[in-house]
Length: 148
Image (cartoon, rainbow, N blue to C red; front, top):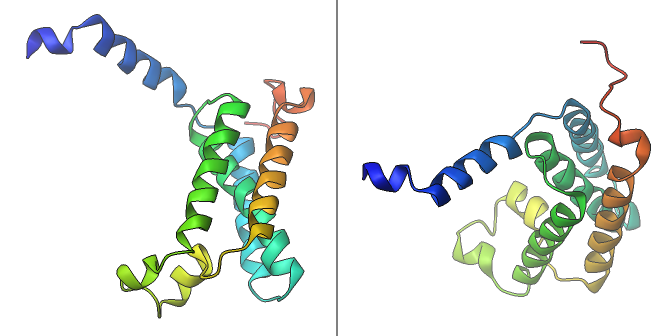
């Protein structure tokens, strides 16, 4: 067991996971603002709630993950997009029924209950927007507008 913990590969993975975790205040603030916006959007209907809400939701997931992990924007964007697509394709099944959550309003709002190709487009555009904004030079600066 002692040899296993001192194995070069294990040490490399542990060192990499330690350096990849870093709190980012700006991304966390953006996540909180997007979360409140999403909560406000639940009070609306139509295009704003369904399509624009999905667009903002993937940006929120992106910002949440980026708040704690220093992952390259393109890699994170692909991961968030795959996650979002998986949730959307699960809506083709009765997975909320299988989990016993078909009458749970919160689960229905978070996971949805109807598949839509428009949602896939909104997710894709949201991820493209998040990656583009994250790669802008203004956000790449190490300085923050907030004094600590």
